[in-house]
Amino acid sequence: MIFVDRCHCEAEGRGNLVVNLLQQDSHALLRRTRNDRKFKMIPFGDLKRQYVSIKGEVDAAVAKVFDDGWFILGKQGEEFEKEFAKYNGCKYAVGVGSGTEALHLSLIASGIGAGDEVLTVSNTAAFTVSAISFANAKPVFVDVDKDFYTIATDDIERHITKKTKAIIPVHLYGQSADMGPIIEIAKKHGLKVIEDACQAHGTEYKGQQVGSVGDTGCFSFYPSKNLGGYGDGGMITTNNPEIYEKLKMLRNGGQEKRYYHKIIGFNSRLDEIQAAILRVKLKYLDSWNAARQKNAALYDTLINNSKIIKPRKADYSSHNYHLYVIRTKERDRLQKHLERHGVQTLIHYPVPIHLQEAYRELNLGKGTCPVAETYADEILSLPMFPELTENEIGQVCEIINGF
View 1 (cartoon, rainbow, N blue to C red):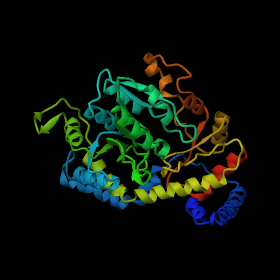
View 2: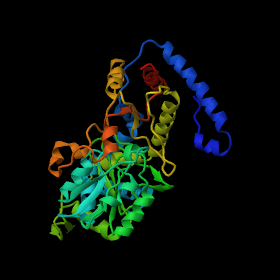
View 3: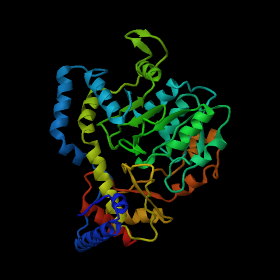
View 4: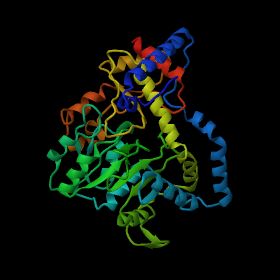
């Protein structure tokens, strides 16, 4: 299989040759897939394949934690924070219990509280908005860009009031929000910018790692993430020393030192076992992201059905393809079609947050975020993980093309 950076080659004047090679090779793969009548089940994700590939390193790292006998706020966590901060291009990183807590504690550390409003999107995991609620603030929903599904920067300012204190752009599916205009708007109105990078480990915005652009960056290490542990975990990145010091206290009961509580805090700490595992996996993150990008390029090439809208990549962002999300007005029928042929898919996310029962007190009905609402009925996430094989992708595409 031939894989090349199509955009780079087009810049060099070789785009047509590259496209021809991709098409010739993809046609051969589809013929092989078509001739293989014994379709096998294809999972949406398969964490075991990745574990098997690094089993020795992971098992040794976990065994060392048990041998050391230190399980909370120890050397593994400290070293992982340093390594992740360096990888992310930030001065500081603070390990916490989950991606949700990364967002929650970032809001608290940024001074967000009761009576404040926080702008974000409605086409995200509910945990993004839960964090705003945990801070006793009010979520205000901005619609999304029609092409890239991230926050529509031209729709932000009309939602800003005297109560607005922060913006949480979500780097959705592995692609960065357009951070330049967001930072400009935030500076103009004196707002904090808290990046939800829980799906965007390793993604860059104009060459800069997401999570290092705003006041804080929030990451999840849920097992299915591009950098995932074998349990829950999260990380906050920042270049602000005051926020950093406050975050360290907030995650550990408000303690400045043991048993001396300077502020009211929480219990949200990344444990040593997860930190040890994540230290091993961080070394592979770039290669795993490259594998996802290769898989996405193959999907792009092989899917040939006029009913399907494939994902677009913004010029300002790299894309780690945490998810490969297509759209079709016949989404439910396509999902059942794929399921009948042994392909597992998911929907991220079927109900926009402003229409969820949990947020009915906001009294927001349909029409609040029309783009997000429309896309919620059309989006479908195909199998996507680094170890997904070319034949498996070919099988998925053959089934889609026959729909």
